[in-house]
Amino acid sequence: MTLPRTVKAVVFDMDGLLVDTERLYTDSLVAVALRDRLHLPQPVILRMIGHTWAGSSEVLRAHFGAAFDTEAFRVSVVEHFYETAQAGIDLKAGVLELLDHLDAVGLPRAIATSSRQADVAHHMGAHGLLERFHTVVAQGDYVRGKPYPDPYLKAAERLGVAPGDCLALEDSHNGVRAAHAAGMMTIMVPDMLDPTEEMHDLWVRIAADLHEVRDLLNGAPYPSIG
Image 1 (spheres, rainbow, N blue to C red):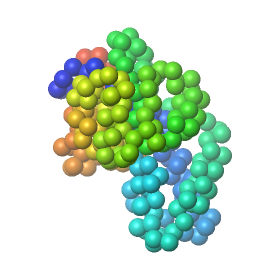
Image 2: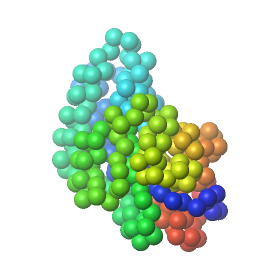
Image 3: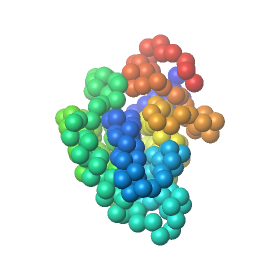
C-alpha cells in the first residue's frame, strides 16, 4: 500500500505517539482517584485520551456529576504525574529513526498536541528533540481542540503546506478524527486505544510503530496489520 499523495510535511501528535506519557497519566489518574476514594473506571479514563483538559473535564463531570471539582483534581493529577516523571519519560519506538529520515529527505514537521507548551518543552526537551520540529501547536494556540481539526490546520498553516499534503501521525481516536477532518493523510499508531471500525474509515494506514512509518515513507516493504 502506498500513500494517496506525495507527503510534503509530517505532523505528529505527542502523548502516546512520540513519548510514552499516556500510561503515566493514567497511573496518576488512578492514584489520585484512589487517594480521594473516587471510583474512576478504565473506560472513563480511556475516553479522556486525546482531549485537552477542557474535554477531559467534561468526561469527568459526566461521570462524577456537574459539581465535581475538575480543577482541583487536575492539579493533583499533574503533581503526581511530574513526581513520577522524574524517573524519566521514554520515547516511543522509532522516534529517532523517523526524525533522522525526515532530516535526510528534508521534510518539514510539526507537533500538534492537546498538551500545554510547558508539557511539550518538558517531555521533548528532556530528549533534546524540541529543535527537531519546525513548530509546535499546543493548548492555547487554537480555539477548538481535538477532535476538531483546528490543531492540525494551525500546524499546516505554520508549516506553509496545504493540509492535504501533510501526513498526520496519531495514536488516539480523537486525534485521528481531528487529522482526518483537517484533510490530512492520517496514520494511526495505536498506543492505549485499539482501532475501531470508525477509525478504518478515517485513516490511510495503521502502523505498529514509527519504524513502520519510516519504512513506508522510505518506500521499503512493511507488514500489513490493518
